[in-house]
Length: 143
Image (cartoon, rainbow, N blue to C red; front, side, top):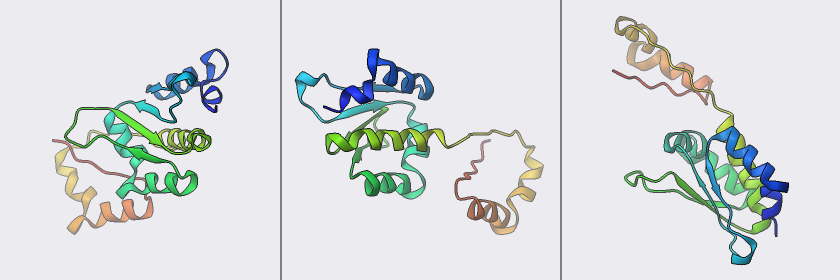
């Protein structure tokens, strides 16, 4: 009964969400009587932004909404997440998923390799300092 609120009039709400997040959402028709919404999108975005560091975001969403997620195993080529919970709580959980996914900005910098040791610091001290103080910062090195 809450799916129409997620879909919106003339599919406006769900289409806006899809446009902003570049994901796919499968909401079963009311005649099917299923409480599951399926969300599919870029796997890396899902892993970094929805799951969060050591599963923190999923735990926060579960704590706040009592909705859980079924995520594909890392070795499976699937971008689908299934939300499970009471129908009335799916919309708030979905809203939290979007807010988590949209709260992260990704920046890439091309830094010469000779500077890496100065940025990283002795025994990773500089990087640890940055990531400790700014819990949302993740540093990845590419060759």
